[in-house]
Length: 589
Image (cartoon, rainbow, N blue to C red; front, side, top):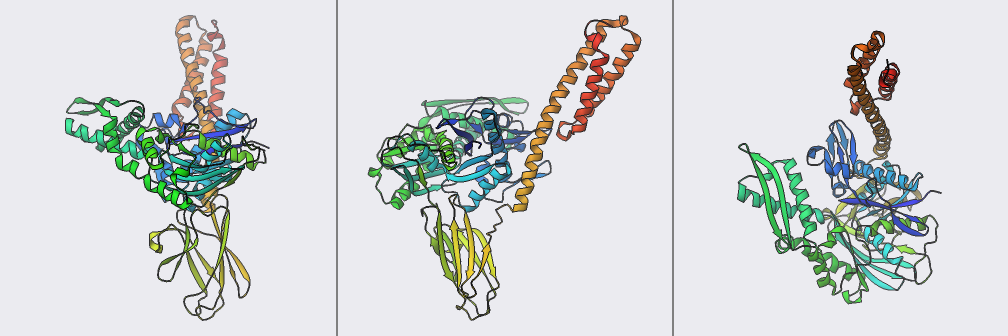
């Protein structure tokens, strides 16, 4: 049985972990780093780039580079490049495929099973989209688990004492806070809250906007008009933010940023930590309400917390740590790596699901995870009211049934609007799906008895079934939502991903053969020049014929549309030239 990998699919960076010899370890990528930028790009010749290589070329290839796609999960967002439409699921699948490949290279064996983490506040559609991305990437997703829960699993493995822990998770694009109880080998999520559109990207944007404003005042030039320039500005803003976590000032220098009237303009600014904290004051303040809500839902005071764990790279900012101290009255724990703990927790859960006995230190019992649903589930009823069925922070898995009836006489079918959110009116919540129950026996309004069952699995994903209590006829109902991919779309995406993986391998092979062929042509040309008139005329003619043939193939080749036959032709012509020019290259003729 192969190993289960744990994947933290992040907004800014992603990482992967696996359990080896009973302990979770991080899996390095091809460059030896533990985190991989969540960036996908398509080069001008059609080559797909993922991770560090994609991030490095973003400035010169802005409109063909995709970053922070996690913020679009569960929406109808898409981007069209070279005539192909990419949805958030397909872009995320490319990142997951890279992480899967890195894990296979590290372990030296195929990897198929994974546990993938999501923000605790992801709704049903966003969770399903993440699971679909894993499926497209060729992964069997055993579980979708909340990121703060992953962090608590990582922490709980080494801290067996009974305690209530707050996980404050501020990542690149999302913010979550969870109250988790650890004790007797059980990790139970008591409450969770958060904001799916608050993270490090927003802090970067504040610095970038400040830079644009300052530059406009000093140089009378609007940097925001140029996409490529703004990419450089945002990268500099992110770097400045990181520097201000340890220094009081950040010196931002971008030479030759733009040119106007034939003269280059340089950006040279200094941002102090005090200025930065003023710029992001309201963003930091936005984390307060979710913290207070989570504590209230868990029914505990901040003073009852045993630990406060900081997760996500954005928690390295001193202003964030100060806010956590204000909100909880506690010094945040530094016992876990904020960048890696979520992935290691996912790997721990994956290994446990596989039946391996991971032991908690202190009590010697196996870990049991009890997670919760982040948002309440409701049904739209007469008058546009959201009638609550399952309350937020209900422990997963959860199953609930409720009997409904018809609102009009002799209805043969009813439409049910499934909602997720906390507002009293349906229109103020998120519709995650609609389904229609058909074939109801004709009867006056209020007579039919229709039992609708909501079944939420351990991934937090909802399934619905219905039974007519009059006839006992039961129907299975699949929730459909415009933001979800259909099974057909997913299957097509899987085929595309496999095809793309094959194309990537073929392109890599083609580039290698093309490079070797060009190198051979250069050597032959130099050897012919050196031999001069001493070269045998017949052999010289053959060499030139073979060289021309090889050069023609090289000139015609387009890596983005290369075929296996073309690669074979190139290899054959290269071999032919090597044979005819062998004696010449070896110093004789």
